[in-house]
Each structure stands twice: as structure tokens, then as C-alpha cells.
Image (cartoon, rainbow, N blue to C red; front, top):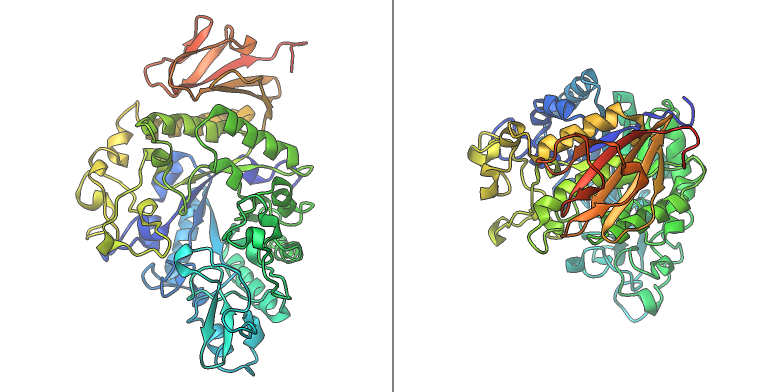
Length: 535
């Protein structure tokens, strides 16, 4: 496999949150057999791979990100046999499968931690980060948990008189990746799933794996920061430490040993673009570090243009971008950009943006039908960081529980599911789902949209315009982020054929010039490159 033909360069990945995708047994919680039963939908949608959020044994304090056994499927999701059946069924449909690898922490109920906290003399004591109280009493330093409700990143274990570190809830103690036995144990987890045939991993919170071994206080200027996504966060002593790159090279070597087509996708939540790009290494760390700067943009042509420009500027030679606009931690795309009631139209434009940029695209389940944040009443709230509204059940049809399963779902289904659902949109040629299918089909059929070059055109108000080009085929992408019509005064557009518009009322084909974009409309215009034409 050469540098330029890895499968993920052309791919669109689809994140499934298993609890919320499809319930096969009526217990109200999505499961692996339920997902297996919906694979035809994903194949017909046109995605190339599925990323599964955690389905491992867990007390579910952080809904699967607090693991008690990395090699076992939690009974609520099924069995290892169910996973094997899912994997085989996905591969039979040409779908690859990535699973979540959660290396920063375990559950406080994991046998490793129960052993570690049993005594200061436990052989596994140093598998986790333990420290004496500060001289004045209280936590060893001023580090904070990511979750505001949790407060400090330290909890006192009264039995042994020391504090343990947790980047998230107190039920998620951090592993000590300075310890060789931890590295051996966790890389064996990778091998377990690779041996079962998975196609790669999404690595959770990779930027947190290595902490300052001296456990120094964070400087006062950044002491209030809980993540590495703010200016100055590079000064934090427990996030984005240089030693993380050695760990990533070790993980990459393990995965590469199973063949060059195994993918490492990683959650790299750091603000500084150069430090973010370092997680590619020299092609020996992550193949695809997730791009927080892109999905954090406000709704503006200038913002997205700059985010892409910065990404292209800092990419190491041969590296490949990855873009997403949704995941299990973010407000839904159609809600996030709905500040003035135009969220539905913006969701259509965002789909065209995401699926026409140079880079791997990642979709979050339900975004392709326009699912929005769902109000969850206090008595049903379960997530420790308030993310329940973005994790509600997939809306399959207009029936009870939106077709999610035969019983009541673990989180509420909104009234909007009566019209915002797969079955309704499947029969509507103007629906968001239809638009996604057409975009995915075009991306698959047009190499210019998947592996072609990317060239932004000069800014023009609220319109973002760029060229994708490959072997004599040029496609112009024009996206009007504004709420007023805008004339498209670009030479490529003259006489070109409109392949697709986000406006279902605009027919494809030749257009009179100049092309005028409606408010919040995007178009794809094709043209054959003539010899001697400008690049």
C-alpha cells in the first residue's frame, strides 16, 4: 500500500452511539444486534466505515467510558458473539469497523484499580497516579477535572491516605502511562480486538495520556482551565505533554503490525494548531487526529475558510485532514447553528461543506436526517456532563419510540420525530437524507471530491468558494453562508454544469450566467480543465 492509497483518504466514517442506535430486545437501550439489523441502511447511505462508541463492560457512570473489562461486551449491548456477528455482517457489506480505545483511565471498579487502591504496597499501586496530600492538606496540586461538576481532578482514598488522579469523574481514575506494565497491558487490549478483525481504533483523550511526573501546579494564568482548547493551555502540566508522542508511536507500531490498512483516529483536544499537527508524527503516530478547531467554528464563511487554511498549513508532508461537525459531546449540528431559526437550511449547507473538503469526513448518527438536541427532563437526566440531549435515540420512523425499539427508550424521543425520521425522508426527494445520499454518491463517483487537490478562491463576502481537482476534472464548490442571495462571479462557474444544489428546487444541468446563489445555498459546478487554464 503506497502513501496515497490508504482507504481512509477516500472514506466517510459514521459514528454510532450504540445505546441510541437500535434496540433489538425491548429493554430501551440500543445494542449490537440492533445495529447489525440496520447495517443495510448504512451501506445504502454510502458511508465506508463505522466507529462504535464504547460497548465494553462498565458501570455506565460515563456511559461506557468507564470500563471494568476492555475485552468483554457489556450485557446491555450483547455478547462477544454478537460483536463478531456484527463485524462479519459489516465486512460482508463493505463496511469497515472501528472501535473506541479508552487508554487514559478505567472505571474505579476495574480489577486493576481495586487492586491498586487495596494497599500502598499493591503491585499495581503505580498503575494509577497516586500522590500524598499537599503540605497544607487537600489535593496534591491545582489540577481540575474536565467536568465542572466534578471539581478538582483528585479524590482522597481514606483507606490509604493518598489522592488518586481522575481527568473526568471520580469513578474514572487515570492510568499511569509512565509505567511499563500499563503500556503492556493496554497494548494487549489493542491486539485482542485486532485479532478479532477490527479495522482500527478511535483513541479517546489521547492528549491526556502523559502527565508531568513531578505533578507540578498549573501556572496561575491557566489554573482555571479544564481542557486544552483555550489560548495558553499549552502551559497545563497534565495535558499535551511531550511524552505522549512516544506512547503513540508504540500504539502505532502495534496496529501497523496487523497491516497497513488499520486506522488510528484520535481525539486530540488541543488549541495550538502546530501542537495538534504534531500528533501525526512522521506518519508513525495518528493517521487522523480529530480537528476540534473545525467543528468549533461559528457560522461564517470566513471562519471555516480560515480553519481549513490553518489545517492545510500545519499538516506534515503526506498527512491527511479529517473533518467532522458532530459527535457525542457536541450540540447537534442542526441545533448548534439554529440561533436565528435557520438551522435546517444550515444543516444542508454544512453537509455539502463537510463532504466536499479535502479530507476524510466523519458523520454523527442522525445528523443525516437533521436530528436536533432533545430536551431531557431532570428525572431522565443521566450524563455527568449534561450531554444527554445529543445522544437521544435514532429516529427511524414516525411510530412509537421512533422505531428505535419495541419498548420505551432510555432517553426521550421528541415530537419532531414524527417528520424527522428515516422512513419519511427516504421518500422525499427534497429531504436532508436524500441530499446526504446524493453527496455521498458524488463523492464516491468523483475522485476530485475525495482525493483531489484543494484550492480556495479569494473571499467574497459570505460565500466560501474552493476548487477540487483531479486528473483533468475540476469541481467548483460554492457555499453561501449568508441570509441574502449572492451572485457567483467566478470564471469556473461560467458555462459549467451544476451537479448538485442544496436547494431541492434548483435542477441540475447547465445554468445561465452568472449563477446566483439563494440564501444559505451551496452548489457543485463541474468543468473540464482546458489545457493552459489557470490552476
